[in-house]
Length: 486
Image (cartoon, rainbow, N blue to C red):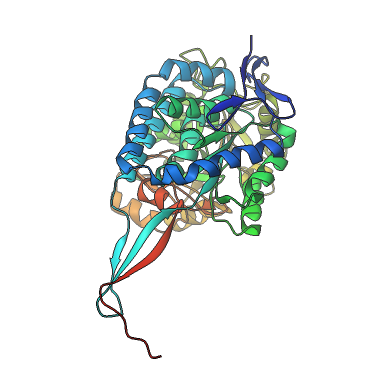
């Protein structure tokens, strides 16, 4: 029997005004896992009504009271590992290790948000007028429109709302149609149980065919004062255009075309393990996944042989099997898209090192290609699947040029035993994030997370997340009466 969920508005579970629903399909079995309410524009207005009504009281709530809610929510989420593992396997094809990682990081995002609530915010300014005191204070914006993606649903569902709420805003979140339970309702349920007041967080789900209309209605509402979006670059451009049209700030964390560089002094065994994790964790469906593996020519033969052997040994298939490393993609259409990228590259001259072939429904084989030509779509397109491209370089300049040969700029890994050398290379690579002697996939709740170029703008994490969802206001206090010329 499928799970059913209504919209979550004003602290209540309510059906869509139209009565319509949408199906949430298990990508591995193809069966309907859940049925959720399919909102229309009138439901968006109801959700914004509730968020707007709750804003003043939430913003005025004592910081220690707000912090207690976040800390309780973190503990509640930590206790739901088994529930999340089942939920993510059925809804998004996530493996158990990936689900437990989602729980641990998301709980720590809530704890970091709790710390930010009571951290000092603002500055005392030098004043031009004698006897005056100047202050720069951080204040909440109002209602925030948040968009949560499916690929790391608990992490990114929590991240969509944690910093905005911690800054004193209220939120209307539109979770992905591919994982509305994990990246929307689960987060709301945990925060509701932790004591979040009614209306502070609202969840609006929709049918896939209505996504554009719902997003536009949410961003266009004059009471929505900021936009928080994580997703593909193509959709992010549209969201950014809507936000700009209505003069609303946006934080956009978008796609990546990330490189992992294996320098000449790298430990090959370590590099193989690191790169395998970077490429194939969550079947490559992470914005930070390593799409391009650039190996110094002196190590290329040894690295390729060991890497190919390790990739060939990875178990693929049922995400509920504890031995599965490469689970299904989010849908059969996603697997076919990845297969199309691989097929196009091979047709244009690329060589299959390991894998290739047709997917089994939503499960695509772990695949490594080499000699991918620039006219192949995969050369520049984000794979977002269990696929990577191997290439070699002769010197740092060649490696840096290859790493930067993309419109994206999210993250990069540099495998080297010489941190000084690694730092010198890292300074030349144009990404928002870089990891020296590590691969490309990493996230910590206190660190500034975000990209450059077509990977978006704005930062999550620590004080940067609070700054992204609050305004700096100038306040002066005159300690003596001023004198005026007339």
